[in-house]
Length: 440
Image 1 (spheres, helix red, strand yellow):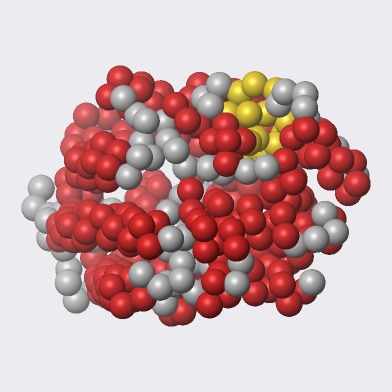
Image 2: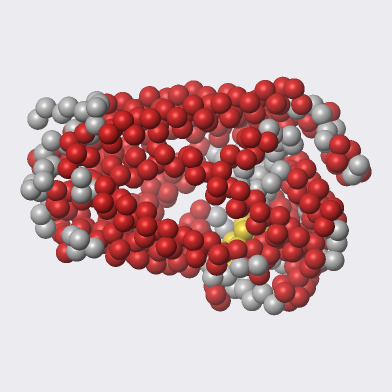
């Protein structure tokens, strides 16, 4: 079957415009960030010059290493982003997706029943994702085994990397199959309301994963052991008791098997909430600093940041899915992208293709929403910092902890304000210290 993409089609034009604009925005932002490093990378911000720990930590050698690390990531990202753009456009321009659908319908027939809809949808999504996965493989290997190892972060072995990849694929296939079979049922049985039911299922799935991930998925990749008795546990427990935070335990994750980067996170909800500390974090921070970092994370819970996000996310999920549903019922959407076999008469049988195309267009435009989302996130980070300082009755443990984390992770100190505005979900180290000191 001849596949012809209509480049005058409004949906195709929006996709092309969004994809190119997103690419250019990212190239511009990364370039000005690079130029800022060249100009200011060797300078220590004034506020850090007044803190003894930071002057000891961020010496000339450290500042140079931070710039070299960021530059190495940047120069690895440039060819990756260009190749990704070329592939993304090529898959559409040369009709790869219609070809895949024609191939699958030639084997399994038209998607009329739940079984055939699931089979075609499931394999379509797998095959559609293969080109980008193959393209990303060498760049991923380069980042992991060249860039990250060069700067002493990656502890990954080829065997462990392969093991993680195989496990990741296995888990992804299972979860994708579960969601796809549910979607297939809704597409076939609820042709006019699948968008609402699918939204509800995706929201429920998100909550269920909060329970399933820490108990069943995360242990496939890392070992979690209860935090040993001692000063660290006493300090953390004291903070937890002070704010009345009930949890399912304090755990240490063997992150050092893979990386030297440090972090801590909460997972689950209700009685299943657990606190996870990277073992690398325990080696870097004092007990007070660890308590302060966790005090920050507790702030997100106690200040209801998670709840507020849910109040926005849940209705937004329904709104976005409704828009995608409406788009999926435009015959011109399919015709524009070369799906000539989809007509007004059989469009209800190909809603999964419409959803895929609508998401593809949405993804090309979603970059413009980043500043709005990040602005809200940075505001909440400031609030969580203030909460930690209040609980510990001093901002100093969090300030020194943040300085150490920034140093250990070789994070940039003076990124351009525009870059921060667009890309940063967290304020910079300098901004956080300024706020903490002013609050105090």
